[in-house]
Image (cartoon, rainbow, N blue to C red; front, side, top):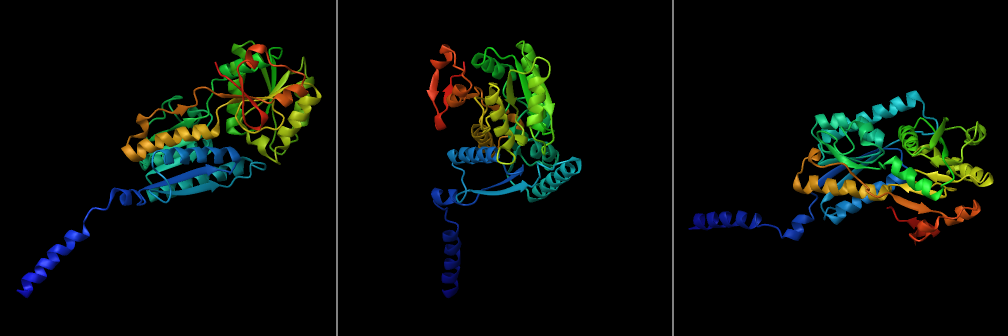
Length: 353
């Protein structure tokens, strides 16, 4: 009888041990592991990351509940970056990609073009899903097209049709058709200037560019663009890390030069540029959120990345600084004034048609 009682107790024990947990408790278990890889730590990348995490949270995926995130920021001295420094960064990215591939996370978020471009091959071979964000043009990081990234990859892009962006610029500043742009060897900056030059030609406008080193003072390049030939009638800021160095020194100098010579400054990326009168572009936070929505589908539904198209902000954000316009003695056309709404920090937001 004792043996039978012991056997009964042993049989009952496991039955209690495997009793299903309540659904709420199960959801709180760490379920997804995400690796984040980026080069440098700049404000726009943080905005993109915050947007990504916000989208996961909206899909019931969040840290402390069912998400673990390991974020790596590869150091790069953007100011002193030369060939060997860039080569070192590429090697670091690939080393991190190999580490990530061995760790087998559920998903990798790459923020920016370098991290995406140089990590994707290793992650693809390891069959680790890759989602990118804050990339100016998907084609530049190995994608088939603006919408198709190929096997194992999807994400969101900052891409804006440059012809459309410059059309808005021309509506705000109808008397300016010659645009000056100063850029460095920054990958996004070079691509941005090339796209602007192509879009300008389609509209009968012209872009003249000067390339400088990240350690250079911007003023000599501005003077050359302004004084050479007929001279430029406005300056446009590309998506280039140069303008964020030294507490935005180049951007501030550009704004001051523009104000002194009554030349408007526009930025073709939604990055804070002191002195800009007009901003046209995609917002890093919004684009990061789009990447998060794709990541949620991969994590929760096991959707293959290549099934998901690359997303982008369909209607770029357009902001105007009325104080800067006033300093330039420029008044918005009535048609645009009628469509403005008040935005943060005293800016006006113009409706995109």
